[in-house]
Each structure stands twice: as structure tokens, then as C-alpha cells.
Image (cartoon, rainbow, N blue to C red; front, side, top):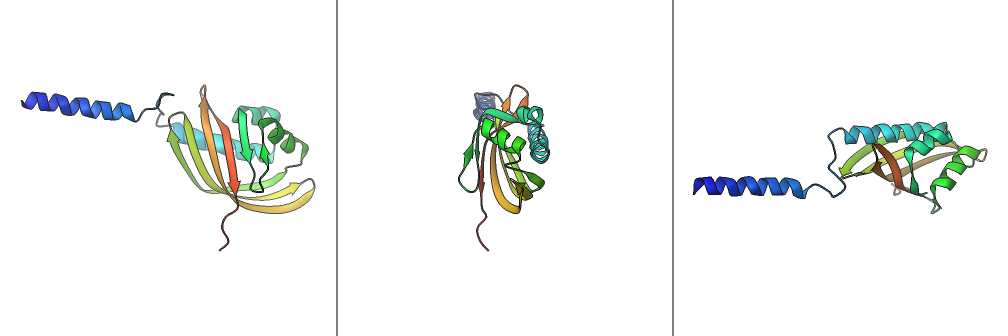
Length: 152
């Protein structure tokens, strides 16, 4: 009887472990660090953009929401950065959290930046929700939404 109970408990534990795995594959312990590294590369690429750097970090199906309501695709996001229509002079990321869910990562942070959009200096302080997706062996930004923080 004891052996049967031990087998039932072992089977239950094994099944519970499998239930947490997504059909897209399990995440590895280094995934959060890899996402953080990709997010940092994107921060740098947004200050000093090149098509190669942006292409390596942004998914083809990107949906990039701005705090003012504008939504960019990969093409329009990259075009605005490359033309200077969207020009980040500095970007600071704080309060970042990363949660891995299968082949996706939910990244939240506060972004503070000095901008020079279209030659007009400005400052921005917004909250960001980013969804990163593991594509092949690389993490790419799939979706992003910015919101203005509530007034104090």
C-alpha cells in the first residue's frame, strides 16, 4: 500500500511539473537575463539606431503603442527612428521586471528620456509594457504599449 501511495504521489508531482510547460517549449533559467540583455540592446539602438540593430531586436509583426495613442508597425517604428522623427537623446530604464511565460516574456519598466523629435527638444517619463518573444534563439520585441503614469 505504501509503495502504491508513493507511486501516485510521484506521478502527481511529475504531471504537475508538466502542466506548467507551454506548448511552445519550456523556458531556460537564463531566459530572463537574455531578455534583459535584449531590452538593453534595444535601449541603446533607440538612441543610436541602425537598421541592422533594430532588425535584430524587433519582430516582423511588431505592434508598438505610444502613450499618445499612435501605433507603429516595425516599418514605421524603424523609419521614425532612422529619420529623426522619433529621436531619443538619452533613455533611462528603471523599475524593470521580467516574467517568462513559455516562449514569451512580459517586461515592465519606467522609461525616462530626453528627446529631440523632429528637432524639437523634449522630455518623457512613461510606463512601458513590452512583450518579447523567443524566435529561434533570439528574443525580439513583439508588442509594446506606453502609458503616462498617474498624476501624483
